[in-house]
Length: 251
Image (cartoon, rainbow, N blue to C red; front, side, top):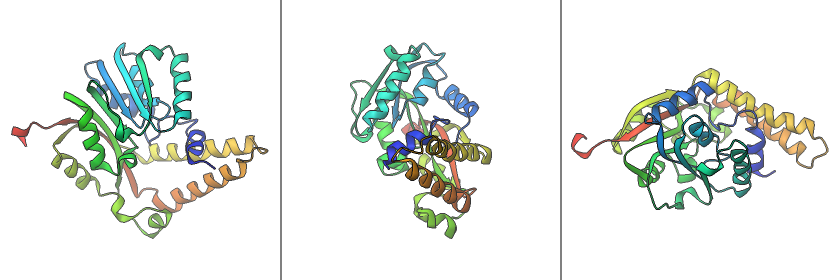
């Protein structure tokens, strides 16, 4: 079964593809968009959930999103148009790492998509390339809450995939960024996200027993659920940071 279709089905009930509650998303966007307007770019936007949340209630924002999956973007365009936001959003199909724009952006987001750039630090470099002077970045990525044990590693992670929270933030600061706000996803947020992910995919499989992908979807949900419950639960953390560039003379 196509990985992108799995992701689409799994995020039906939790459109923010990260372990963040609605309240946390709103708080992060309020911190990142303190001026209430400007140009926003989401690198790895998926179905545009972050862009929709940024636009609603902020009429001064113009948004762009980039994602590799054209089918996902087609669904995003339909949803955004249905919300009456189509004239304020431009979605680009392509590799986020190769995206170029004529103007820079006041806010650049990349939450849960650092893998598209090869890790956290390359993601920060890509964000910096698109950021206007004085702009803000909103970055979300994993970290180790504790040293990964064999159960976590057996799921497919390696110990080098992430660092602990302190080291993660230190590395970001060393690249010339200053955190001005942050949120560490709670166990409750993680559990809600994982139950929604596995539950949405399982529900679809049970509701469509004659679909050729039904059995594969149910198996994928079971495998993911086992990896979470027997592996990385309370080991893999997630931090979302609001960042600004540190002036050279203050480093």
